Length: 296
Image: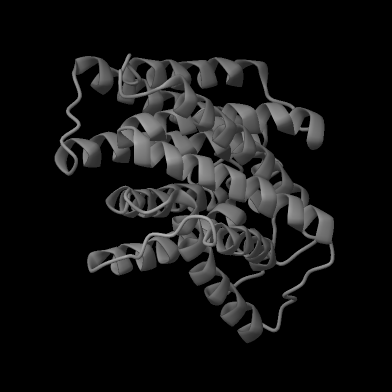
């Protein structure tokens, strides 16, 4: 038997696919920047709620779940993170908003020390520093980024870290889609309430973009939940940084956000940090958890 640890484990693959799907949703959010952020949250979550319920019913899995407070908190932190992130996407360049959001793996791993009692290997902090150093190179001083929206971005990253830990803590206790559903339900309810205070009627292509936000986000949530319930958080959370490559590329060619050599070097550091962190984590943690797939 080959006991050599693999880099592309099921959890790692799921995290990569999750990152790609979420980025596609973010591009669509950028396309409807004229629509209030919470209204976009509502459309995203109401579509995802429908998808979740249909699949859960088909698989005869629980819709309401059993750990109601944990599910609610996961939804609350997730919705807060989503709202703040959408605001940053709407009010700053895509790559900049994505860059600030990529502080979340550091919050995730740090919070996991206290919430899940998961340790972060000492050398792995160095790899986080390498990846974050790449983020700093890409994130340059930009007059378009106000302290207010920078703060919102950091709040989003922190709430994402809390949400990821709650997902992990629900492993084996709830169906993965039940966890996803409660996030969407909280977002849909809070988003619906916001419509009474701020509403902008979508027109033309807006409807397609809003629909795609829901579709891509649902795909991303499914892969994200699968990844976090299969792997240690420190081993997969940093893979979120690879979405920065998508942000710089699409921002450059679609939104005209050109990048210099500093950004290209920063991209290289991010990739190196990701590869080193994941491969090192796999070598140090040979007792991979074998979790039976709960979703077909």
